[in-house]
Image (cartoon, rainbow, N blue to C red):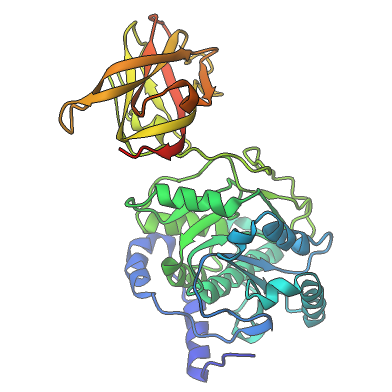
Length: 440
């Protein structure tokens, strides 16, 4: 089954793809990008499955080429489906682009995929596509930026075009899109974690959320940004590798900082890279394959009377992003306070101080308390009674079954410094799991 464009469209795609723009002229490019909301009109060959009319929550896109050694594509697809529950499977679409020009290899892969994952194809969860070579721009004799050998330039330039075509295809299939490679292992129930993170970011602006620190694995986008990203990759396809272009794209759309979540949800399984079978020993040490419990951290106001260092403010200890609160040496009676928007029931609390780089900046002597009976207006809300749950040990505090130990609905929580210290204090993360929202 094919969607066939006109000759004019073919000409346009070649012109767009070979259009040379200087990275120095990125400001001008951004204006172009805002106009690039339409799809690139090229012909896709459906090798297996077809998209369903119902939009899903998440599309998972991966592009695969023939490797000289080791092929992990089937393992990757298996990992996506195996690590998802029945309910999660209803909300995902997996699009595999077989991007090799060797038609015999493509046919062989389609047969293997169709045999192993037939029920996912029938259910509309798995689609396999291919773009004929005629739609690709020139891949030989390209500029050798970064002094890369010619075959490396060709490989990475083609990869940019592969991803542009894949993104373009996926633009209307779901609300969100995540990029994987063809040699990735997923952690259990990754979709539920992704949903939780997206919900926690509601109301804040973001272009890319990252769920792995390797290359372009685990980069999540709003689907409405995919047409612009596809055009962008095509425009600069021969300039630099895909993961560098993705960083530029994020910056152009005004997200300056990386927003990366720990632990990582995706990990490289491949020992060999798809480039010439080169060894690929990249591993993400933040990856956890087993299901892990992401905290709920309900909406709250955060405040401290400690002397905050630069912009390491109180809110950074409570966010799910990899950042932290940092204060100058605290004194007895200093506190870090959390006032929840609504009273809550808490099942588990975990607070970590210090970091791997600054293991001395921990809370030496401290206690954790929870409070009730709120007084004051919006800005000055505070609890009038507190219950001490316990002391910090080696800079950390963890307690489970909190709802069985605290009989009231919790409105506040505070970390109290019980003895002055010479060292600075980093509160790396405050994690709260709720059992239910109070009925009050």
